[in-house]
Length: 193
Image 1 (cartoon, rainbow, N blue to C red):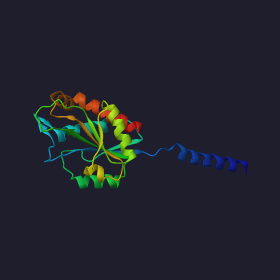
Image 2: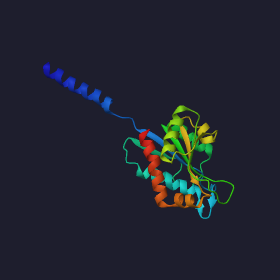
Image 3: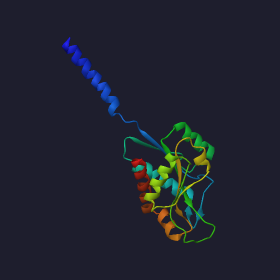
Image 4: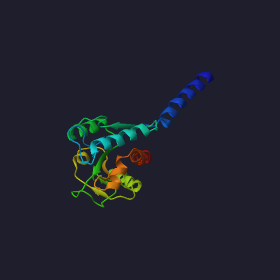
């Protein structure tokens, strides 16, 4: 009887500990904006759709956290529509979504520089936006009624990586070094959240 009680206790303890220590995997969607025929900003050999896809893939490649799954809305030069993207995101029910873009102004060259973060109007999205802003030199944080933010059921932000009109930023964002550094900053925010 004592042996049966001991075995039952060990099994019950193991069962209880498996629930206590198992950590549910965090799922984050990275949306590489544009794609296919939609090139986004195209300036002096810099094509937004290609650059944001490279950054998105680098985020996924750099992820070494077994409890974090990074899912891309596109992993090639395809163009899922905005509705297809948000439908996919809403079916996945991720912890949050980050949509990547590159900013532009109407002038050919500009001193305007730096990242910008737009967030869905809720506290969870604002928290992620604020963390990203800190990593990107305290860049501006704003609300916006963009499709990716409005139609995502989960917390969502859109990160403009910098301004293509600014030659220095265009060179940095288009470089392997810049893309790795930006991916590392974004991944660090994902892991901290």
